[in-house]
Length: 214
Image 1 (cartoon, helix red, strand yellow):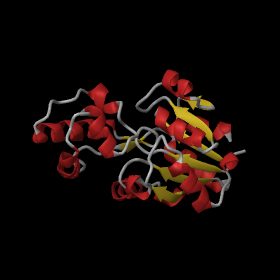
Image 2: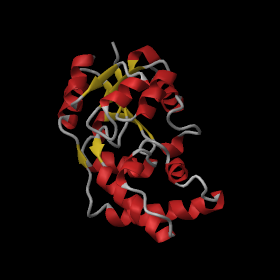
Image 3: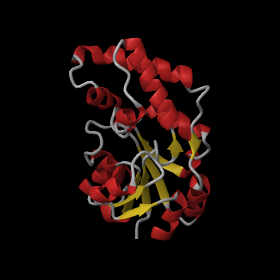
């Protein structure tokens, strides 16, 4: 039975869809590139920012990426005070109940560590998180298993004792690559069919259902 729960953040713990879409579109406008529609932006959720940009603009010169990332972060900082992401239903109470039973929670996200840590603190769930791993903490991001492998090493757990929870196929692929258990959530940025196709051991429609899996 898994005792370590490795969580994605965007689309799994918190509904950050609006701020991600708005930030991307404003950054695209400022950089003078065609605006990507919401579906195109959401399809990149779970990838590091650099990979998101290159997915939307494959022909983008690599020397332009640092300026693009700088612009994205400036826009994000401008918007985060007015577009405030919220936890999905039953996240905090489920984490609280499971933590009281001895389960450990960590976060493995493609979001930058500073932004990730700020959100966890502001949303009141930081006390339940034993280890936070952001995009700048790994060399190889999702779907590569490095984030899970690094977490397992830091927490001294075996893969068979870990459950990776995420809303995107890359989360499932990351967990499977590390030989951990996996659970997809349907309320985020993907859907049941894509999560099943990625090989998820479990798929749930509500975060609270995770309690019945462990």
